[in-house]
Length: 270
Ligand code: HEC
Ligand code: HEC
Ligand code: HEC
Ligand code: HEC
Ligand code: HEC
Ligand code: HEC
Ligand code: HEC
Ligand code: HEC
Ligand code: HEC
Image (cartoon, rainbow, N blue to C red; front, side, top):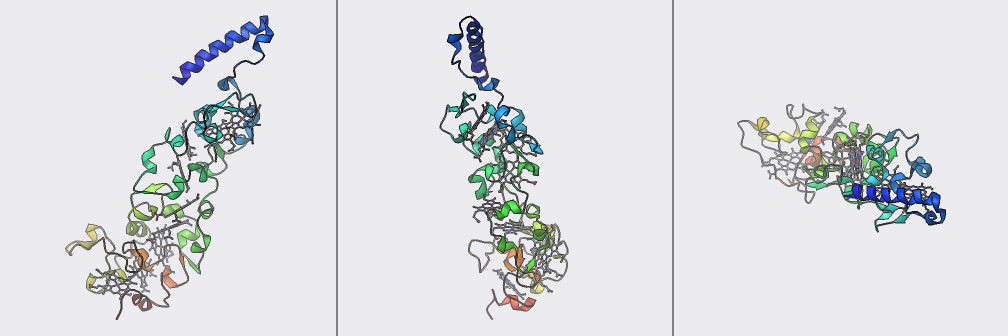
């Protein structure tokens, strides 16, 4: 529709322009035509000499700024009430080309609701994926760095690899994890379920953390919905005993403990 309409305006403009050579006064204030105006004449700073340019920009500024009219005049006239003359509010603007499903799983990052541009530059960036800053600094714009900087820092956190465990947009698993919590851990610690470990408890009946079926073959199915006794709203998991980010205690223990047995009394009363 829009293409057709601007095509006819184009034709009208061409008609006005051809008339204008005969009668210049008539063309003193011709209707503007954004598609014909080189936005880069004044806005090159947004994209020029920046490493990664959003493919959408190559598709033309009006692919997101249909509300900007008479771009040859400053300030520009706007044909809608959305900030910056955008075609739609965020995040709907972005869903015009990006599959909404990826951003709408069970747990949606609150940051997505605050607008995609909290993390992405819509035009261009020197960081991969158009990020306004690379992880983990990106994350520390909103999350307190102190939680990730205690005495003992978990190796992947120290390496800034937040995305090895978290999806930045949304997830079907709690905590924006890329998959079930124990599977995230087993990616790097596959030995834990094989060696004696507090999760097995005594006679393998101990701590229910939702191991996959094959790990409990021949055993009574473990509950996966046991609640963390100390943290409201959380299920019992590896993270009930370990802080996945950093800790002032050995072995990333969540609670003050100098050795393993100091840990137990935080949940078990004797
Ligand atoms: C003649 C120079 C010039 C041209 C050509 C131009 N702009 Fe602008 N534009 C400006 C100036 C100056 C501003 C105001 C900058 C500011 O407020 O920081 C502006 C502001 C904007 C804004 C922000 C509006 C707001 O509400 O803050 C948008 C969006 C924009 N231009 C889009 C475009 C698009 C799209 C085109 C091409 C169709 C274009 N401009 C062409 C000079 C230009
Ligand atoms: C993918 C969609 C998209 C495209 C394509 C796009 N913009 Fe934008 N533009 C935005 C969004 C979103 C904002 C608002 C950013 C914010 O508020 O954080 C914006 C803001 C602006 C602003 C205000 C200043 C600023 O940096 O925030 C200007 C000027 C602007 N755009 C010009 C342009 C021009 C010129 C083009 C084509 C070269 C263009 N835009 C293409 C989405 C887009
Ligand atoms: C007019 C279509 C269009 C719109 C609207 C659009 N995008 Fe894109 N975007 C693309 C295309 C095409 C690509 C390149 C192919 C791909 O990665 O899907 C892309 C790629 C990206 C990438 C990956 C860049 C990279 O280097 O891998 C990010 C991040 C992105 N878009 C964010 C956004 C955000 C945020 C918005 C809303 C402000 C938005 N897009 C709106 C078309 C669009
Ligand atoms: C909390 C910050 C944050 C917010 C908010 C955010 N993103 Fe992203 N996005 C990222 C990060 C980080 C990556 C890079 C992921 C990677 O490298 O694995 C990314 C990657 C992408 C990509 C590249 C393809 C992919 O999935 O890796 C697209 C497209 C994209 N984001 C679009 C969007 C859109 C659209 C929105 C708003 C609905 C949005 N993002 C909101 C942080 C964010
Ligand atoms: C623009 C601000 C912003 C940025 C940037 C941001 N976040 Fe968030 N994030 C939030 C808010 C707000 C919440 C919800 C309140 C809270 O838990 O602190 C949240 C919550 C979370 C949660 C908990 C989700 C849940 O449901 O339990 C995780 C995990 C998370 N963010 C990871 C990240 C990672 C990883 C990055 C960097 C890639 C990042 N965030 C960048 C604002 C942000
Ligand atoms: C080794 C995997 C892993 C890495 C790496 C990781 N996280 Fe997490 N994160 C988790 C797990 C697991 C949870 C859920 C913990 C729970 O159940 O309380 C979580 C929870 C969170 C939360 C929710 C609040 C909280 O502290 O429980 C935020 C915010 C968060 N992570 C941000 C980040 C940021 C930012 C980074 C990078 C600096 C990062 N994470 C790196 C595994 C990880
Ligand atoms: C991306 C790989 C990776 C992931 C995912 C990962 N870890 Fe680690 N973790 C490491 C590395 C590397 C070390 C340090 C070397 C070692 O001791 O094995 C470590 C060490 C540990 C330690 C011992 C710390 C110490 O001080 O001795 C604990 C406890 C731990 N991780 C728990 C977890 C938990 C719980 C998860 C899931 C939430 C998890 N890890 C996910 C890589 C990972
Ligand atoms: C009930 C509390 C508890 C739970 C739940 C728990 N751990 Fe541990 N974890 C411990 C204790 C206690 C130690 C120290 C064992 C030792 O020093 O012999 C430990 C040590 C570790 C270590 C370090 C091993 C080493 O040799 O230093 C890793 C890695 C680890 N746990 C990962 C995990 C993962 C992954 C999960 C979830 C599948 C998990 N833990 C669940 C209590 C727990
Ligand atoms: C973060 C809290 C927490 C910590 C720390 C903890 N446990 Fe547990 N423990 C639990 C929960 C929850 C259960 C499961 C109760 C249920 O099934 O309802 C459990 C179950 C057990 C069981 C099995 C009880 C039964 O009825 O079969 C044993 C044995 C056990 N824990 C021993 C330990 C030992 C030893 C430690 C210290 C190394 C420890 N626990 C640390 C929370 C904890």
